[in-house]
Length: 153
Image (cartoon, rainbow, N blue to C red; front, side, top):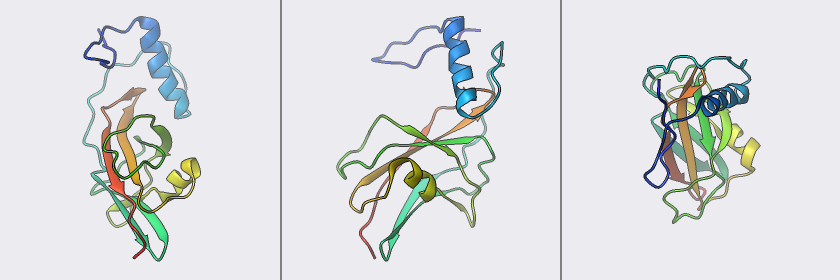
């Protein structure tokens, strides 16, 4: 089984056994799961539940929600960046927010997860969120969502 590294500048190569072991066990440790001695087989990932980010500002109370037509289960990992200038369209330096909460009425409220990591939200700034599936220490390709925090309505 040959697993390749994430492409950087158009180049990637096979991971060594130690690199693969570290990659899988670091993700398992991050999620509070037990480490493995041998890498599990690479899984087939299902459909990602979060489909979009919706940011509202009603009377100065900002809410960040992910549209989830289906349940994200217990293996949807969320990452985000600190608020960015409104003109930014792509970013790096994502930090883990946690696992996607159970949706209510088709959306999962992630406001408290975001505020716990980055602090209060500010109108006029851009928010970036990534969602990916994690199965047995393997992570799917993340899907990135972004939105502008609106002014108070």
